[in-house]
Image 1 (spheres, rainbow, N blue to C red):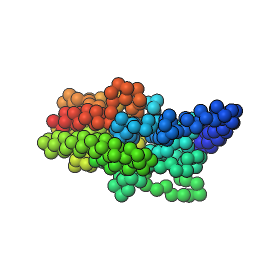
Image 2 (cartoon, rainbow, N blue to C red; image 1 turned 30 degrees about the vertical axis):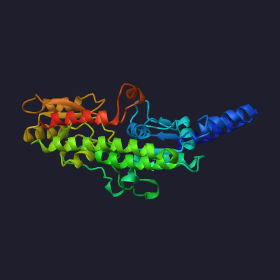
Image 3 (cartoon, one colour; image 1 turned 90 degrees about the vertical axis):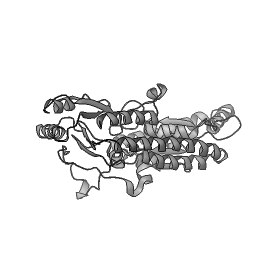
Image 4 (cartoon, rainbow, N blue to C red; image 1 turned 90 degrees about the horizontal axis):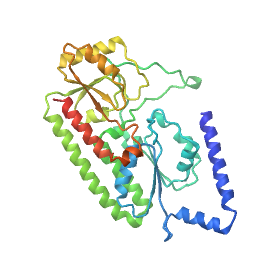
Length: 341
C-alpha cells in the first residue's frame, strides 16, 4: 500500500509539472489543446487503457479502422502476468486521464480502487469484467487431489476475507461475447458520431466468436473423453464449464505455488491411468517439470505434454507477430481436440 501511495504522489507531481510546462507560452498551450483533441479537425481523440491483452484485442476489433484515431494502451505489456503486476507512476497517470478504462476486477486488481481516486477525467467510463458478468462469476474451487494454498494471515482487526473469485473470465468464448458487447456500448457512447461503424465491426466480430464457440461445442460433443488433466495451474475453469468438461489439476488458477507434493503427483498419475488419458496439459511458459513427473509415474509413461495459452503474458510484440484473441483461442481448440482424442 505504501508503494502505491508513493506512486500516486508521483503521478500528482508529474501532472503538476505538465501543467507548469504548459503555461510557458501561448504556442505551448495551443499544442497541448491539439494533443488533447487528438485530431486536426477538433474531434476528441479517445484514450482507452486496458490491463490485459484480451481486453486490448477486443477494443481493437471493435474500433475497426479506428475512425477517431483512438489511442489504445495495454498496461501488462512486459510479460508479467495479472497476478504479479504492479502499476508504475506512468501507468497510473495514463489511467487518470483516459476516457475508457477496462480491467478484470479480481483480487489481483486491488490497486485499481486507489488509482481511480486520482482520475482527472471525471467522465471516464470504467468497465470491471467481473461486474459485467455479475452472478455468472465463479469462485475458485479446490477439486480432489489439488494442492491447497497456505492460509493467508487474518486481516486487520479480525476482518474476514470474502470469497476469492476466479479471475480468468476471458478464457470463455461465451464470456467474450458479453464483454465485447459491453465494451462496444461504452465506445459508442464516447464517440456517438461513429457509433454505426462500431456496431458493424462489433457484429462482425461477434459472428466470429459465435462460430468459434460452435467449434468448441462440436469438438467436445464428438469426443468420448470428457476430462482434462493439468500438471500446472488451472485457469481454464470458465472454458471447461462452458462445455461440460471435468478436470483435475495440480493447483488452482491463481496459485503462486510452484512445487507439487508427492501425494498430488501420485493422485494425478493414477487419474491418468484410471481414465485412460493420453495427455497432460500445462499453460504457456511452464517448465513442465510437474507434468513430466506425473507422466513418469503413470503405467505407460508415454502421455504427451501439451500446452494451452491462457493469454496472461501476451504482449504487443506478440500482437505485432499476428497474435489475436481469436487466433490464440483457435490454437487452444486444436490442443483441446488432441487432448480429448
